[in-house]
Amino acid sequence: MFVKVCGLVDTAQIDKAIEYGYNAIGVVTYHKSIRYCPPEKAIKLAEYARGKIDSFVVGLHYSDVEAAADAFDYIQIYERKQLTNLVFASSEKPPEGLNYSYFMYDTSVGSGVFKTFPKWLKDVEGRLIVAGGLDKENVCNVIRKIKPFGVDVSSGVEKDGAKNFELMQDFIGAVRNCS
Image (spheres, helix red, strand yellow):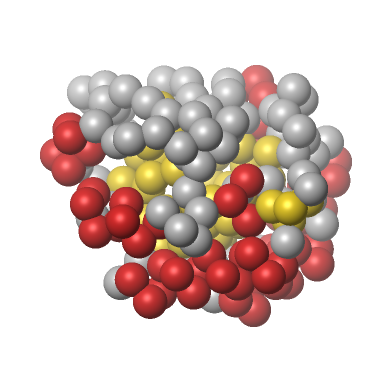
């Protein structure tokens, strides 16, 4: 099971993600996000992660990530744009003809609110990653029902608005024990 932790803002968080066995990290360069990381800092984080763990730069539109995009392995946006390393994020079915590396189903659009998942997700072709309000309590049920390629967590591993290493470890433990 592919597991991504999103909204990281420093190298200590990247180190813990690697130590705990996450497959990827996400850095948010959307300026209105509470997890916003300025492009200059995001590039440094991507360089730090290079060769150790896959990195995703995250925004709503390409313009949100453009300044840092070349430093990252993948570009995660909620916009239909043809990119070689696109992670297309949406709460709707991916459009026909759009090539993407991963499809990120995220009904919460970064809000961290858990909602039920639509039945059509089981029919999504390609690498499906589910996100949106996942935590150690609900992730196993989601994995069993949807059988995605991967899961993505952000607010589910936060305490008082910051990444919490114990919660990060508990989340990946729940995923690994479920698979």
